[in-house]
Length: 88
Image (tube, rainbow, N blue to C red):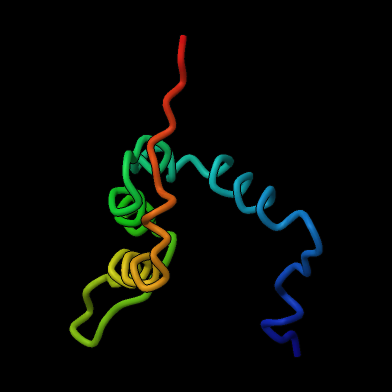
């Protein structure tokens, strides 16, 4: 029997790069605006709408964005969130 642990890759140093590649290589994330989102809130909802997570609350509503936003705020990560401006 294959366990969940057996099915997941084990990362040493490449996890961030692999995760970024996963998002870029899957067109649904572009389609739902993940890369165009200007704030962490917009990006959380874009990820949810793209199907990144199937988590639902007790009433069957998607909950990923709310959970992610709550975690970001709990650890004050919004303080390091900023829009990247690229000069021409």
